[in-house]
Image (cartoon, rainbow over all chains, first blue to last red; front, side, top):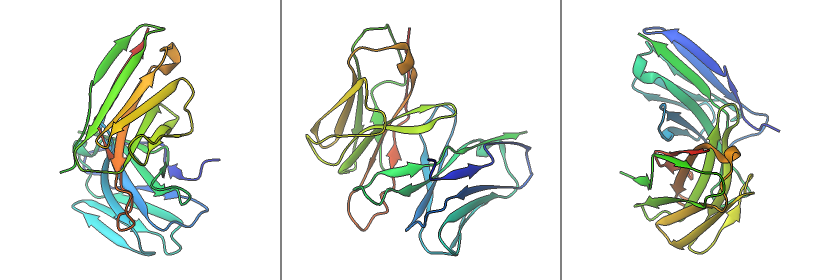
Length: 112
Length: 115
């Protein structure tokens, strides 16, 4: 059973376009994290969202946590080739002392 | 800045060899994790550790073992490498305290090829 669904699985766009990727679940999260993994590297934490309805901005990236805390979205404005990578969402496995459950990610390719 | 380092970026081993992958973190994190990442399968947890000398099996522990003799170091051992263990191996660490959201900090990964 996949607890986190990320969509789309793949996205290929031109530089300058806007895009949104999604992370959905039937579970309620106490918090949710977004990571970006560049080709050949490890994932890097971008943001943690905690409060339902919360919006966080990181330069051209806007993260939103759903009101019911079951879903989240990441919007990128005017995408650049440097945004290319795998975008992963993750939430804490409540029964553990710190394990995270990761989605399979959205693989984004931004062409110049 | 949190730094997680892995002993090798690329490794090529032969079937049947014993393989050691080492991971070191410099942030005094209690938790350490080993994942493997394969196309279409996402990140899969192999083993994790919440404390020195402590280890717990993750989702896919078969064919692997781990060692944590010091807080900053977590080693993954492939007892007898097989071709189906060709993969990207990622180490991560995190705090355990309730004031954190257990964000994980990853190393750069080791691309292991078993021939």
